[in-house]
Image (cartoon, rainbow, N blue to C red; front, side, top):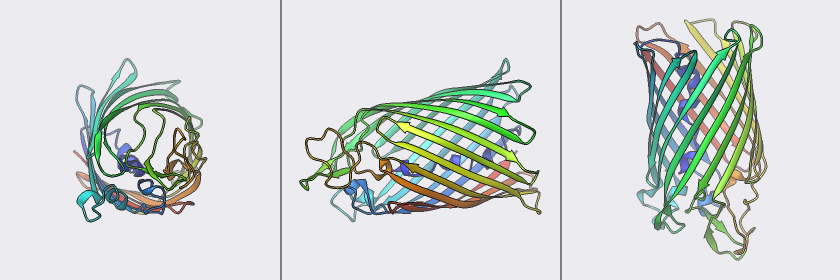
Length: 368
């Protein structure tokens, strides 16, 4: 359940993967990343302990275009997570509980029918205290001489949670469901500019707390966090990509987020891409992202809440904070017969509550 802090590797390296979607036949990408974070507000120890965490994540992405017109893909991977917070879930600080492993897979099939693209998805994720099965479908259609595209995606997650409490004791299991819906409209604004707007709506229900995360009450007593059994989230994202020339392209977006836990957020990301004057096609792209958000109605520092409060959490992920992420990436198109692409990216994340993180990732691609 600690993977929610990690960046999805498939998305992290998506420029390399997506650049190959127009090719026929078989494509294989191997993606890997290392992530390291630290901080001083672990929710597992009531908001006052270390947030030290390291993760390695290998992923295989396979794409195949059939002669009958179906596009098939599979993402299969794992996370290996070492965390002082995980180890704090029981009293044996030298135990193997400080290491968590997650396996996951996602499979999709896409077909163009009557001028419309249909995609069907199925996936799973499993770690020691959490099992998730998910599925959904997507639809898109282009019109106005392919200058305009509208698309929609629906995805549903059914999760089972093992209820390890703040003493590390399994109290049984509970369920959680999540349904995500997104609607996107993209428009070619000129020969050099493409814009899009996306609406995202998500509804969750079931057990939304993390049973092993502590809250320290005003009396000094440690109790498990307690959150409502439903949550609605909404986001609106505006993207604009502009080519200043064949060698300079700016990708940018602004995202507005709101949920009924009381969190409101604004995010801005800029990614200028520069074509370097060597190699077949080598791009360099600096990364900058700024994020600011308000605190949830249910968040408080240690000693804020009393035993009579209905809901409470010490999870700083839903506290008020500002954060900055910046980094640098490079992608290479190679001349190999099969091995034809490489992508490397590194980034640093800094949050004003003391949490900071470093990540490095790379991807290797083959086409057959």
